[in-house]
Image (tube, rainbow, N blue to C red; front, side, top):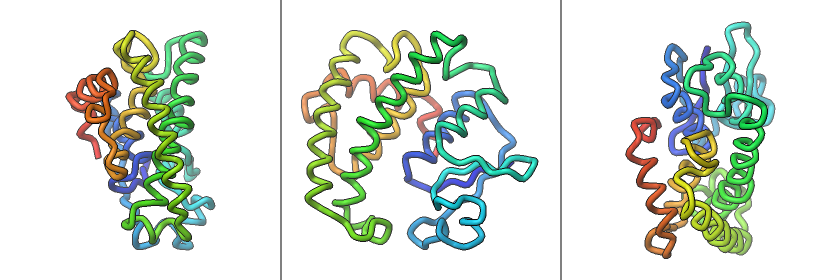
Length: 206
């Protein structure tokens, strides 16, 4: 199999971190240069029409895109150390938390960065700075919710580390580009959680 990925982008990092947590090896990496527009090249678009990373090329020639779908496939193929739940009940609640951080935490962070950071002007045409700034306010609203949650439990979805923590962590690290620092903004529990995740070996997967 081949994983099409990109440096510094949060969604490819989510898959790499997921793989590292599960100890998955033997997948070839193909780096796509987003700034050079390689994700919009005809050869890549023929494989991934929406021109996004990551994407997983399977051994049978099919291509699976979208981060959550790739992780679901890998979880089924490599069931050891489950990060998405062991039964329907746990899977449902972990997915709930993962979707929350994806939609209400990662998405506004990505929108803020893509529309305000000059380095991403080549990828986001046109940029809408006012929209980006408004998304930055939503990031802080979500930070309050996450901080309150993590003040009563160690991990996003409850008692153990899951895919929801991976999503939230990769989002928070990407938020550095919008100059957001949880500790400096008074979110002590969120910062303590971030530091716990950052100490894991998988957090170095890039």
